[in-house]
Amino acid sequence: MWFLSLYVSGKEGGLSVEEFRKIFLEMYPSLCVYASGYLNDKEASKDVVQEVLTTFWAENEKLKNKDLVKPYLFKAVKHKALNYKKREARKSPLDTFFEEFNAELSTRDDESVENFMALDSLMDDLEAAIDELPEQRRKIFRMSRFEQMKHKDIAEALGISPRTVETQIFRALQFLRERLKHYL
Image (tube, rainbow, N blue to C red; front, side, top):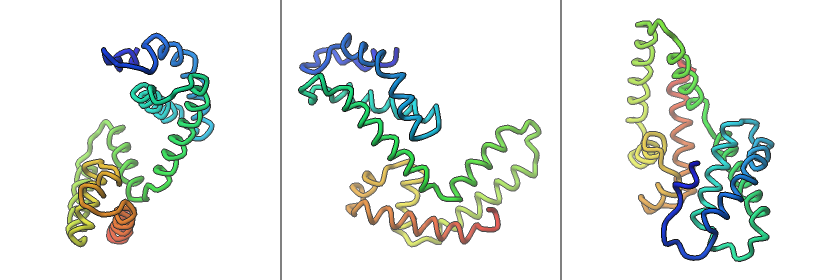
């Protein structure tokens, strides 16, 4: 199982591999059901639970009272699920458009020239629009969307606040949505 590969030999304190294995086997199904109540997405729920359990394994020595493991895991899953849901809700129509466009292309067998020409045209227009953004906004947008960096990491790399990062991404998406509205 995936969690056994997380074992780091010589780890002091915290749970043993066997204790963690027992918790995983006991809690994983109920945590997935719990996360599904927030997300209504089975795969996303599994991802959230795995991420919580991975973090828990890495940091479980901080939990002094083993009776608090279950409440801790449920609370962590709730917060991770709500954050996931918030991130998904912030996806712009432009993000959704790209996802749907890519999904449509990947399901087609004909790989028609028109589809690739449309995609090529869209990508050209997108690049041109991104190049029109102010320098810092362009840099932040590229770090977020193309390098998949988190807002906190972008803020640290550029020496600005995470709120500034959010604002700049929001403004970039507004601009791009307006410039590419004929594709939407």
